[in-house]
Length: 113
Length: 115
Image 1 (tube, chains in turn orange, yellow):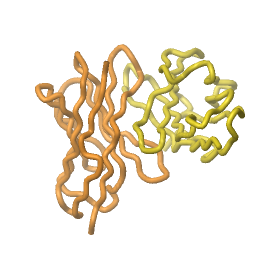
Image 2 (image 1 turned 45 degrees about the vertical axis):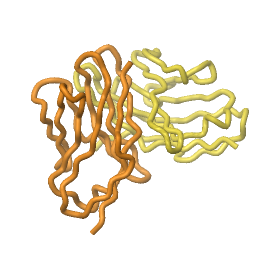
Image 3 (image 1 turned 180 degrees about the vertical axis):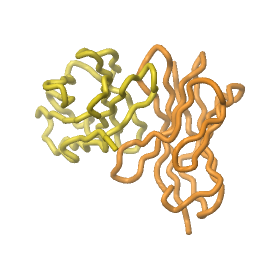
Image 4 (image 1 turned 90 degrees about the horizontal axis):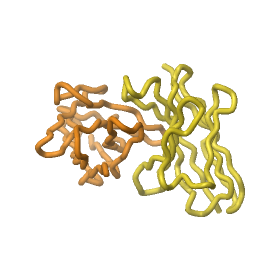
C-alpha cells in the first residue's frame, strides 16, 4: 500500500533563508508525487508534480522538488523564503492504477522576518 | 482563473441529522473527488467520481455517504445520519483529465461540525 511520511511537523525559518521540506514515500513502482500548499482558510494548491522524466521538477512560487528513487524521497526546496510562504505543506503520492491521492500529515512552515 | 467552489464554508449539525455538502467543480473537468481532514490529522481520500458513477471509494465511504452530480454543474456529498466523528473539513476536488494532467484542483473546504 502507498504511504507518505513527512517527518517534520513544524519548521521555522527566517525570511531569505533556504528551505527544504522532507517527504518520503512507500510504493512498489514509480509513484506520482505531488506537493500542495494550504494557506489559512484556503484550499489545497498544487505546487508541483512528478510522474516521469526529469527528476528535478520546477513548480510555482519558486519551489522545486527532486525525486530520488534510491531514497524514496521527494523533498521540496526553495532557495530564499518569503514571509508569504508561511503555510502548511502537504506531500502526496498517487499511482497509475488509481486517481486517489494519499497525503502526508503536513509540515507547517513559519517564517520570521 | 477558474476555481472549485464549495458551500457552505461552515456547517453545524446535530448528530443523526442529514447533511449535504455542495461543490461546483471547474466547468470543463470530468473527474470529481471528495477528501476530508479531521482536525490535526492528514487529508484522507473518500471517493472519486467519473462518468456519473463512483470509480473508487475508501473504507471511510460507507453506506452513510453518497455522492451525486444532480445537474451537470454541482457535485454533492450527502451524509445520511451524521456522527460526532464525521466532524472534519471536507474538500472537493476536480480534474480535467486525470490520466493526462495528473492534477487535482481543490476547493476551500467545508468545515462540518457535528454536535
